[in-house]
Length: 260
Ligand code: LHQ
Image 1 (tube, rainbow, N blue to C red):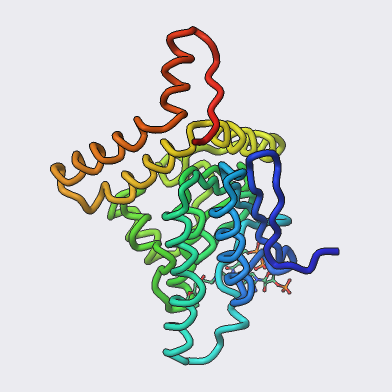
Image 2: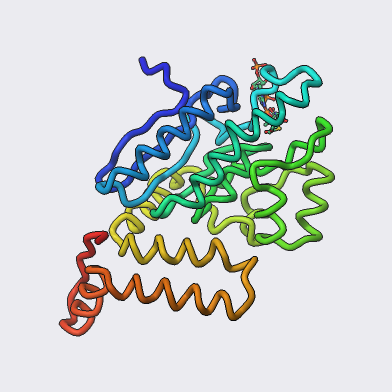
């Protein structure tokens, strides 16, 4: 029996990170947030791992902050929670130099939703849902929600969802561009893992440089972003995988990327 609130398993070059408090819909305790940071660090530094797959145990992805841990009007408590628990998770997800798939297997609420939405590829099972639950308890969206959501779906829809706290089905989420794909529940595990496995066999450094370029794309001017692409492309062009990709194309064979 594993009592860890975050599980880490390896499946070939994919690291599977599972939020693991199923009886509380994987709501985050402080300990759990620290464990997630540690597992992300472990994946970041392990060169065998070329894709991270983040999902939830049981029927939920995550119901966000465990509200039984934050009952008092303690301003300093909130500051600490964001600075020590959630912001470092979001920053790690955006900085890690490998693709991260959020496999949203069930409800994703509050910080749980926003952790999913900052990942590189977000897919959901047909019965999953997304809720910016914060307004219902008098809080504001955190964990990058006010940054990512308007960029994903536009200001108006983001603003309404954040203020009303309405639940969005997985299908509605894909239709408005909040997530990439929805899979029927029965095929969700294999289809979402299939995407992660595909990504884990791709040119990892090129994907990391793509991620880096995307990170700056909404804040840079066109000139700055063209320069960022220029710098990134020079680095991508110097990788073994670029050489392999071009050779495979010319030789009319399947490329075998090493991630180097
Ligand atoms: C929970 C939770 C939960 C504890 C379900 N906590 N137990 C916050 C604070 C400070 C600073 C920084 O940032 C944040 C970030 C945030 O994430 S704030 C937003 C926190 N999350 C929410 O407000 C969502 C609260 N949960 C819900 O609205 C519902 O549970 C959803 C819609 C997620 C799912 O509804 P149901 O499927 O009907 O499940 P349920 O409500 O029956 O929950 C099942 C169990 O899980 C239940 O426990 P019990 O012992 O009665 O079976 C809930 O109490 C527990 N649970 N969410 N966040």
